[in-house]
Length: 445
Image (cartoon, rainbow, N blue to C red; front, top):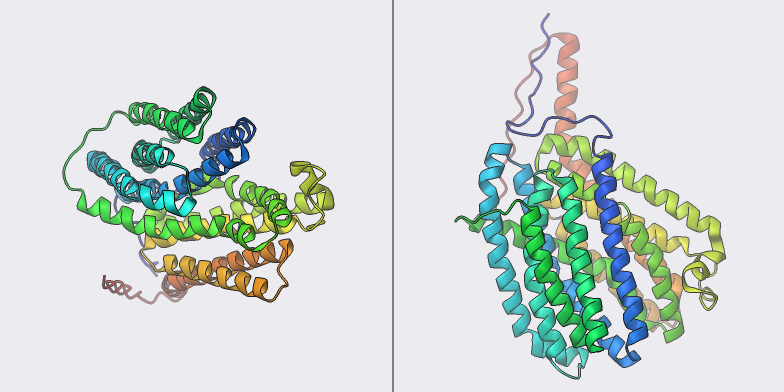
């Protein structure tokens, strides 16, 4: 009796790695991201002390716009990492110049769109002038370009260099902002310094990426980057939505307490980011995706579970530990809800990456979650029953629903493979021949 012939992985796909092989790169990348986030926090504290409340409000609003404007950079990074992870090393090396050219064109396009949007930004944010918004548009050009370099390093598995690029670009960016703030004392000066720091950081990132050249053939990478950016824009909005809703609906004191509680959510969300960075290129191959994604979800859930447990143990002391004795009156010992929400959003991000790699409709679920969370919080506010805890609970519930949808899609996507594995196992026992599985139907686009 002969055993059925095993199925082989996709040609050119990366070989299976032992469990835990990505732990060190993930820790390295997570550490670099946390360091850069810490630098950003220090800059905001310095700005709050150096500027008047009105000027600080202007700077904070423009930095919020910068966060949204950074989505194309993240889309470029995601698309480049998936593209390189989908091909063997020789083909990936030939693709790097095309990806670099795509990043250059995209960065110029983002800068032009940002400049065109300056009057709208000035009007919506009620800014005293356009100078700060103009410098913000300038800063977005090198920041978008660096997203391409990050994706190239990520997709080729050069995690040490990737961590170095994260730290060098973030360090130069925020050092420039501090220099401009101290030299000029205005939000516009801080953003001008940031733009200069971003330009220097882009040059360092190009060197760290191996000084890639350019070549033709931008249509495919550009289309992939646009699709990824559309999905990631919804996630960026969802991650920050509860804070915006709290600011809009709650009284000032409660909104301030919510902002401090949101720090716990951001820590739980950002701490395991290195897992997603290391995982993303492997999601390009279906076989690696099935192997690596469950383990990555388990790691993120374990890290978030420990953080949530630690926050619950701290109880009512958690919020004053971060914000001081003035905070905690409205939330009490429920700060752990924020940590749980951040963990769920980190899990949702991994599932969104998987959806982008598989070209499914996970992005629609993200945008639907944004709409539902906004509607529920608005309804509670209209009924007069909205509180700090209620906003946090709605945010956690929305993230739970999104994770549930992602897991359900993942289960359905793997169902044919489970059926084939069962057929192979049965044939191995009975000796019966195994029918070749039908190729998947091509999805209409």
